[in-house]
Amino acid sequence: MLTLTVKTQSHEETRRVAETLGRAMRGGEVLALCGDLGAGKTTFVQGLAAGMGVRSRVTSPTFILINEYCAENGLRLVHVDAYRLAEQATLADAVTFGLTDLLAGVDGDERTVLAIEWADRIASLLPDDLLHIELRIDPEEPDARTIHLAATGGQSAEALHRLSVA
Ligand SMILES: Nc1ncnc2c1ncn2[C@@H]1O[C@H](COP(=O)(O)OP(=O)(O)OP(=O)(O)O)[C@@H](O)[C@H]1O
Ligand SMILES: [Mg+2]
Image (tube, rainbow, N blue to C red):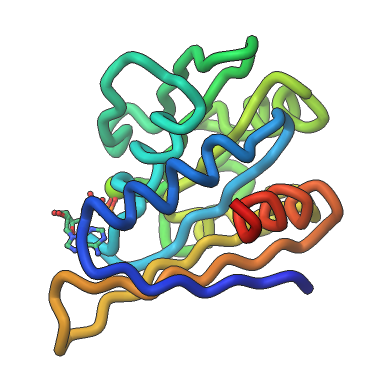
């Protein structure tokens, strides 16, 4: 499995790493973001969006669950936040929130990049090929984050490779 670990020292640095990944997106990628409250998942998606050429402001979709943005080159960013789902969300919960339809529609859609916060809550619904992104806070260094990226298939590995050589 292709993995990459980056340590950032500030909010801006996390944004910059994500922005570089945003420029490596080609469409069809699924990004599963995990990490505690305030770990930097939304910050990461904001940087990702900037790198994809999204012009509008990216906000946290915690209360509305799903936001969609137009990016450059005909790409579309779909930003999901599964926080409001139960710890171990059931298929019925996901159906209620329209997530199953969304995931089915996005699967294989070359124009869409899907970024999911609290992806561990809907792990069983996600495709096999995804870029797992875990953000970890070190209690001793409040402004540092360890970002661990792992690709679980060919498409996500290509994206991660483009990030690692950028
Ligand atoms: N190195 C860093 N990288 C990212 N964010 C950082 C860093 N250091 C400090 N921060 C701060 O941590 C917070 C991260 O907030 P953010 O909303 O991105 O987290 P989140 O993981 O989306 O939280 P939630 O679980 O509530 O959705 C921001 O206030 C940001 O300024
Ligand atoms: Mg968030």
